[in-house]
Length: 287
Ligand SMILES: Nc1nc2c(c(=O)[nH]1)N[C@@H](CN(C=O)c1ccc(C(=O)N[C@@H](CCC(=O)O)C(=O)O)cc1)CN2
Image (cartoon, rainbow, N blue to C red):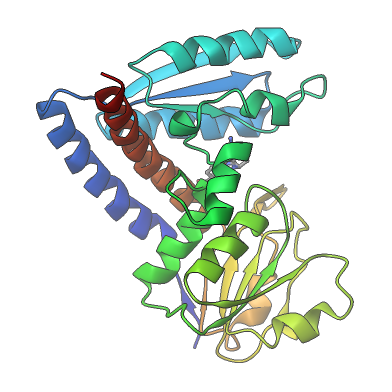
């Protein structure tokens, strides 16, 4: 029988723990704050940012939000990031992606100071991850690791196939898994004989943005399948995995919705708390 992993329940537990730690930090005089920056009117982005802001308030953190019009220029967005970077009440800055076409996302992300980079997407944060040094890690990949840990799935020595090599999920996840002692294969939608790669894995993580890419032909009996994809369809949300086909094949699988998505927001709360602590340390050192 295949078990569904309840990401919403695990995320709630993490968020409750963060709220306790925020209350303790507030008692000691520091209230963490997250600034979300939303450019334009992409409906999905508006939903995600609203969910993030709700989570911030529920955790007892300060909610700073900036909304810019879809025709905002590079300079407009840069000015907002610089203002938030200079504000000591702001522990973390998140630039919601995707951005409108006229904007250069990589350059804007790199304006975020590394200690406030709660998305872990700056070049500096990517470098710290590559070197295994202290830094903030991207939320979805660290959410996947937390999910696997919460389920008691051993990573040391496990064969993990990561399908998808994007900067938001696949690449950082592969590095986090390597650091945990997993043997990692990175594949993607163009991999020749993808089933041969994924069927050799104990854990298959799919983050390609291609709806229904992975099905029964890709998964060995007893494997764990983590579906990071989210697609809006006329019948509701769907993932990168044809999950119905895996019933009775996979040992465990994450659903869409209710799997990895809620973990992304939970890990953002964890990162904001970590950023507040890191920022406070830097102030002490600078004083
Ligand atoms: N700056 C960033 N932009 C984007 C990120 C990111 O991590 N940082 N990730 C995605 C979108 N995303 C967060 O921004 C995100 C996606 C999905 C969920 C989630 O909880 N999904 C629910 C379903 C909710 C729904 O769509 O109705 C679920 O899977 O259960 C949270 C965050 C792209 N942009």
